Image 1: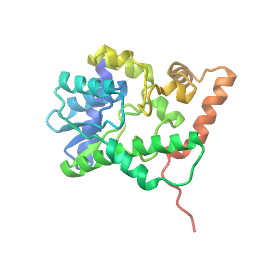
Image 2: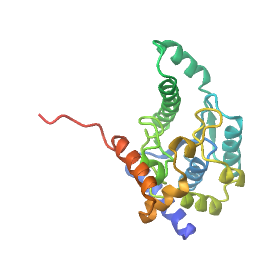
Image 3: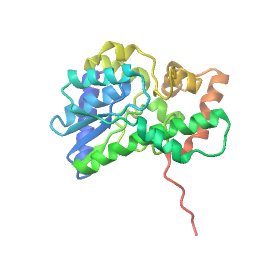
Amino acid sequence: MDCQYLADRLVGWVREQVLSAGCKGVVLGMSGGLDSSVAAVLCQRAFPEDMLGVIMPCYSCGEDAEHARAVASRFSIPIKVVALDTVLDALLEVLAGDEVEPALGRMAESNLKVRLRMVPLYYFANRFRYTVVGSSNRCELAVGYFTKYGDGGVDIIPLGNLVKEQVRELARFLDIPQPIIDKPPSAGLWPGQTDEDEMGISYEELDRYLLTGEAPDGLREKIEARMAANAHKRLPPPVAIL
């Protein structure tokens, strides 16, 4: 993969998308993970004077915020920190009701946490006339591993055609700190949570399937079942035809 060519193309694409929308810069959430770090550096190259990274801890691992700050410091990215812990607590208190299955309760709370992070991003986007940038990769988009109107609630997705290993290779080229490249991908939804454990599929397996169409039968069925079940996340809401 020609990383220099790819980085230049993506930087140009971000700039074109933002300006064509009548905006003057970009804002994105910086989680301290691989994808958001790569997206942030590309955005900084596209709009070095009009870019904002937002760190939004919400009962998160402290290391994640440290990694986000490290990227911001290395690449001179201006940041704002918006702590959402008490906001989540207040909403959960208001929303508390009947008991539900523990798994459903955890999913609802996790998705609420992710959707809360979307709100400050659009606040800053409106305030500064910026475009909201998402950091999902091709693997996540394909199987629907994102929260509808949460991390999926963005304006543009620069990494949406790159599988995980391609993002990792681009990160090395961009000089993202090595601990960020090496750590297990996680949405930080609860202690010890990782993307691969939650999906039940490794990124290596997903990469191979998306790039070649190859996978053992059982794995192929699992991937395609997830793709079908989450297809609605990739589409606009259906509108009744009268």
